[in-house]
Image (cartoon, rainbow, N blue to C red; front, top):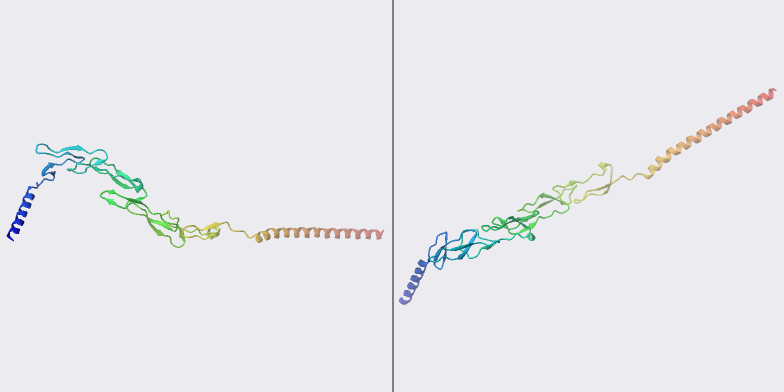
Length: 240
């Protein structure tokens, strides 16, 4: 029992000694092989770690890579890509000290904002016929749609619904009633054929009747004059 306790104490003592051996590096240093080496500045990486006699050797990041902070890294981080196929475009180009910043393309909104950059975007929703755009989409929110009220219509592209055309009020005939997605269809009023015929024939008939009566009256007058003349001639002859 005593031997076991002694072994445990020895193990703990060794561990404590190892902890004490780990150097406590400053914020501007990194630990490597038990040594504290100066970090490389932003935009660069470690080429060779420091030694007892030399300091850290740093080199700039290559194009397409970056390191935003002071570091003890052997490699620079690759720049993020703003894929157009994902609905993204470049807002800020990548530099040696900062990653690319992506934002949604026009007509898209961001689904995943990581830090200041957009990781994925989706196209704004389209409103259907019978709906109107109650809230236009932004870079961070989708389009909001609302239904048209009774007596109005919209094809889904406007920010409000329009009232149906009142054909009667415009002295037109209703051909097809309006729906929530289409306006009413109007056409010219159909004229009454019988009314047109009557309207044309009545004056003609009246005119014919007037002409006939006028001719008949003139004939009667002529006959009366002829009979009167013949009567007067007969009277003269008798006197002779």
